[in-house]
Picture 1: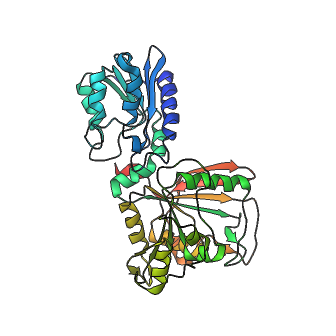
Picture 2: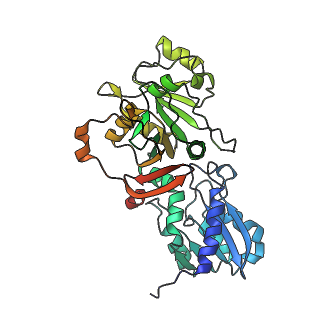
Length: 374
């Protein structure tokens, strides 16, 4: 078989499709984020991105304005077109019927049950198919979908702000602003892109945060604010309780019928009991439940206790560390409460990137590659 070379033109139009796809962030889940551009004679004759509530996939949205111009055109799409019937019909059938001459896909569908089948169907219909154009960028957009569709658990990202000597606060229970406004703005963007935010009761008692998405940008589902609270200590007068509107869930090992639980429920907080593990909330049970709720990605914003427990439990897939160019010195709070004996078996972060963020810098890395499962 002759190898098909990827051209600069292919990358140009795929970059356009990827930009379109990002417009579906927070609007497409639990479906993947997808963008598509239909090109004929060097011009875009159709384009679109997927929004879950509007049902149509990006390919169909791009085909609709093109009409008869679609015949003989090239379709650039950030994810392999589907070949199954779900909420909508198969996109492959619509592409074939429209007379598309060539399909350029950034990546295969990470769902093992369908991966490669859509591209194969298009080839059987005589359509030229190229896959892998700007693949890494496309995979990054849907790493959370890839994790969830293969494991039914969300991608968990641990985010924290810390000093150069690895400390997150001056003393336990205190509020310490460590990083700059640039970094705090970047965190708001992470919250906006997340389906759920997970924190511990220690952070709530120390900071009394609202933990809300303050970007003001549209999202299909409210940001789910989840709290790990083994002994059900969440104060009724806390900001997170006062702002609860069916978007706050507390994971506990206490009875959901206790007086405190009933009071929180009357305030609009959901109380969800999970099994205990060593006298504390079983974090694996929490993550499984969030996956059942179709939460594709979870942002862990917590203190040393929950950070340490999450790392030791192995539920963290990705870390984003915002470093301030400062030294705190002795007496501060470490990023995670972890015994030194854990160091010998600690996994190393892979695919590291380091980027500036105003006066700070951000280190990002992964404990596992979700695409190696597919």
